[in-house]
Amino acid sequence: DTGVSQNPRHKITKRGQNVTFRCDPISEHNRLYWYRQTLGQGPEFLTYFQNEAQLEKSRLLSDRFSAERPKGSFSTLEIQRTEQGDSAMYLCASSSRDSPEAFFGQGTRLTVV
Amino acid sequence: AQTVTQSQPEMSVQEAETVTLSCTYDTSENNYYLFWYKQPPSRQMILVIRQEAYKQQNATENRFSVNFQKAAKSFSLKISDSQLGDTAMYFCALDSGYALNFGKGTSLLVTP
Image (tube, rainbow over all chains, first blue to last red):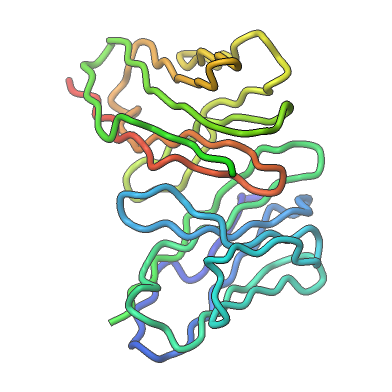
């Protein structure tokens, strides 16, 4: 297993467009997290899945954001009607039920122009 | 609410020297985990070291060790024999039960 994989690595989009990011967690991990990181800040929690169930959502996750994890495997994060303030690095992480240690992907850097 | 504070935005250390990064946190939980993550420039975040709150013994991983003071809610990271490859952002994080709360990070520069 090569770790947590995120695609694409970079995305440039025009304001108002929709974008979708994908995260493939470590295969035996049942927990999956999405975080957002802006320049000079630590990652901020967005949402958490345990298997296919979305158990927690941050108030940062506005109605324009939606995340899914069908079948408890990969996850997608969609942002509708992107705004310039959505420009950030979107990080995915996964962990197993036996350990609180989260393994991070390399992130998707979104730039909204 | 759980908070994590890193009061040192930037630090610099010479190669082979020792440096300590500070972190304080606030939580109402009695059992929790604390972590230090490293994020090298343009690379992914990796775990450096973790500490279980119920363990009194400070965690150690090779050149990395922590000073965990539960009563003071302090969790500092000591890097011994600093190497150029240690240059990175270092984030302190507190496990909230379902996710990690991160501090704003400390940018560490190791100079020759």
